[in-house]
Length: 125
Image 1 (spheres, helix red, strand yellow):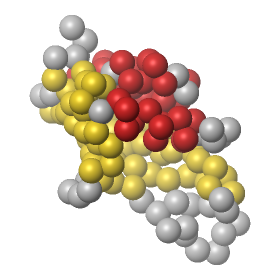
Image 2: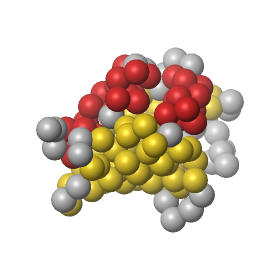
Image 3: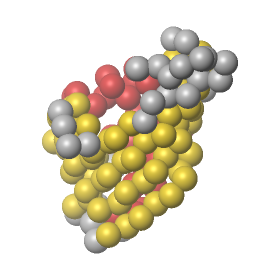
């Protein structure tokens, strides 16, 4: 069975490859995604698939790992994600906390910083 770190790394690689099937294979079929300390974003593959596929339409989409910490079955990533916002190409820092059980992500929580778009006078909400 893969370690929690290996599962999350496979998830990151599938995200960057825009490979929806490989990405969903890292998640339990009823996994949940949340904002950190907040609202449910998606529950299960049926809700995650359209969220990821929508993001995968962005030509510059790429997440780079800045730092990773592993504590038991929890993996915490600081990622810098390049995105295509309506205002232009930019980057956003994210804190991603994954809970892995039996080789699958069962819960993920995300804290998202304000996007930085070069040439913009202020951040985008």
